[in-house]
Image (cartoon, rainbow, N blue to C red; front, side, top):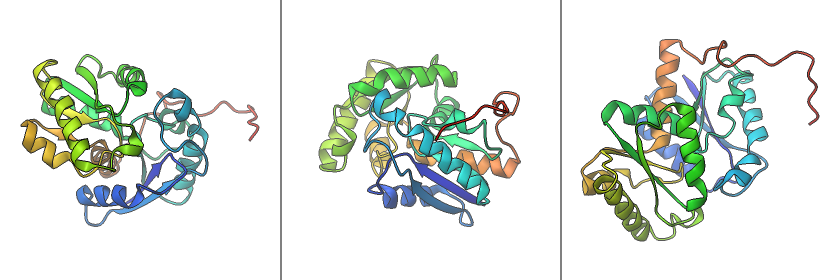
Length: 236
């Protein structure tokens, strides 16, 4: 099985850790390749920055199908380009946050997200409504650290995530936590032990959902994601 991971930012600063995280949970015979977009913002905290990544992400997904990949995982919790790409390819396209939401509902009654900054809260609620999971989303808690600062001081990052997670559990009655950014890596196990609830890393969820769909011979419905209308020209 071949899975292409598309990271919709124009740099590879996180690629090695993302590949490590993907390999940690993937089947031994699954081939994984991580690629970036050529254009876009350094981080996607907000609608404005996320919009720059859309077109290049879709192009990378289309390339993956032509290259013979069995599925694509878009490693961004903003769900950049996922729905649009499903209109133009036949292989499964998995957004990591949607995968994490669906798994969270399987293992708990209410879940909360831990996100970087206030800018992304509205988008995460909107995506939950689009996923159909908002009735189970207890809260979106802000840790107060921009994505660029997550790995500068890991102890400080853990402290802020622990504090936000504790509030989500005690005040919002969440019994599962979902990390709100694909760059929140290498901290999941520690949070699980400290907080005593399941904590989902979206990228790991995305990889396993992609593998499952391929093994089951399933992909998105072309009745739900209709092919493009013929005769419409696109100026690139």
